[in-house]
Length: 138
Image 1 (cartoon, one colour):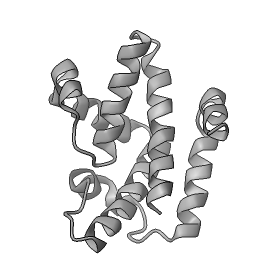
Image 2 (cartoon, rainbow, N blue to C red):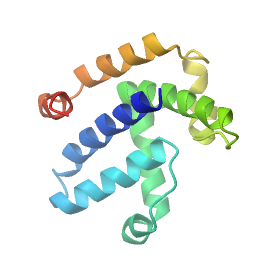
Image 3 (spheres, one colour):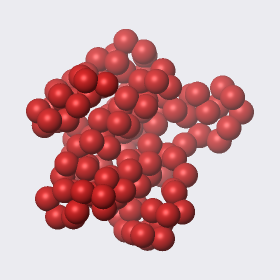
Image 4 (cartoon, rainbow, N blue to C red):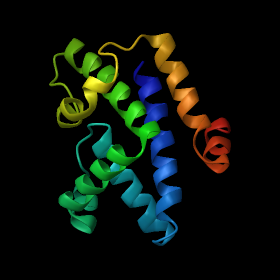
């Protein structure tokens, strides 16, 4: 299921990058999308991203996206649940607890692999055609 979570993060990254390219150069758009998607999926911030954009900006943008985009919110919350289960199984601390404590109650507490994969496909279908095409070519 970790591979599914990676696919979900890649889809969110591509969607954010595409949105960011409207207001930033391509390199900055990609870096900011990576920083934001890493935050949303409970990954440690890259020091270069923090230096370039500030942690406050990265987190504020991630929080704004998850608050305003139902598709991404559902995908992120369920992915964080999967990643937290994996983290717990290998003795690591659960990830994304700040997001889960805010939005987790909106969704089932335990994703099953079949419904999680279906959610990923459904979420990708709700994204732009160019994101869908990039994902399908991976």
